[in-house]
Amino acid sequence: MKSSSVAVTGFRRRFFSGVSDRQWSDWRWQLRHRLRNRADLERMLVLSAAERSALERSGGGLPVAIPPYYAALMNPDDPLDPLRRTLVPVVGEWQGGVGEAADPLHERRDTVVPGVIRRHPDRVVLLATGVCASYCRYCTRSRLVGGRERLTGHWEGALTYIAAHPEIRDVLISGGDPWMVSTRRLDHLLTRLRAIPHIELLRIGTRMPMVLPMRVTGKLVAMLRRYQPVVVSLHATHPAELTPEAMQALARLADAGIMLAAQTVLLAGINDSVAILRELFQQLLCNRVRPYYLYQCDPIPGSAHLRVPVDAGIALVERLSGEVSGLALPRYVIDAPGGGGKIPVGPVTWVGREPGRILLRNPHGQIFSYPDPP
Ligand SMILES: *Cc1c(COP(=O)(O)O)cnc(C)c1O
Image (cartoon, rainbow, N blue to C red):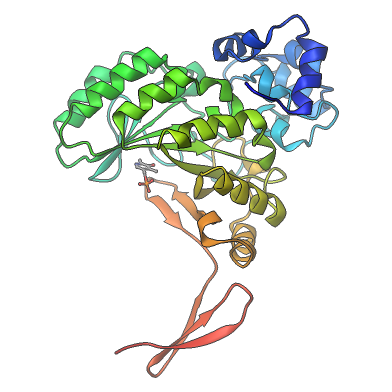
């Protein structure tokens, strides 16, 4: 890595002083040295009571995993630090809320063969793996990631299913995080998918460019570009994730001609403000990443403390739409409980009808009349 942020440099000096640049920039070294439990976290962060008691509960829950690189971006003294809240559990996770479910989107029901979720005729989600570099506390697949469900040895069956359905044109490789798979094995998977004549588009969903940008090696990028068109859909949460390291990773992907899109989950106290979202979306765009979806947080068990009321989400989106380019504005969606798919929600802009005209409301609340052809 060329340069790194001041926070990262100070953190390295303090906790990993004997570690060479080469080790620090090696994604496998970062994975091996992830913070996994209370003892690891306590060494580097001043834990709050809510964090400590969540970490003391053992077994059954969503695992904890934080690469040292990402831990370096967290404020060690502030439990409300936004990046910290995405990965460090709090007791709220153990408190059930109304309407919560382990599988709110009914993905199990829409699983056609192990690891393939199909809700649309033309595109499927392929869960390449069940593991991630880090575990987001609001993960929509918290039911299965991090070893909570078995997800191995299913690729052959998935490929057979996709090959047998010529109406599928688009495969969204997700997980878990597909980039946890070695570049060699991923290369093999993409070769097999590209050998299926009806597959037009390959998409890969990952949070690695934000939590572990070291994963974006020259070798990974050179491999990916052999399978174009490839869209990398990255999970970005907060503008503080756009460090020099992350920006370099995005530039490598963009320079290889890989289309970049971003998905963001709206999270209470983490990114639910106009200023933060504006900065995130604008900076993503400047790094050649098109903000694609802003998700309402799914009602997984223990998510109440992270979910924003939909009315508040719509108000945020309305204010944003008056302030940034349409290119920087993702579509705000609710992935419908019960498997209805992503449903856009947003400010009401179509407010009435007059003879031969419709009435429209702009983001500033002004009403305009448009002559509607009969
Ligand atoms: C999100 C999703 C897709 C992809 O939807 P796009 O709107 O094309 O990005 C496909 N299948 C499932 C099951 C999904 O959840």
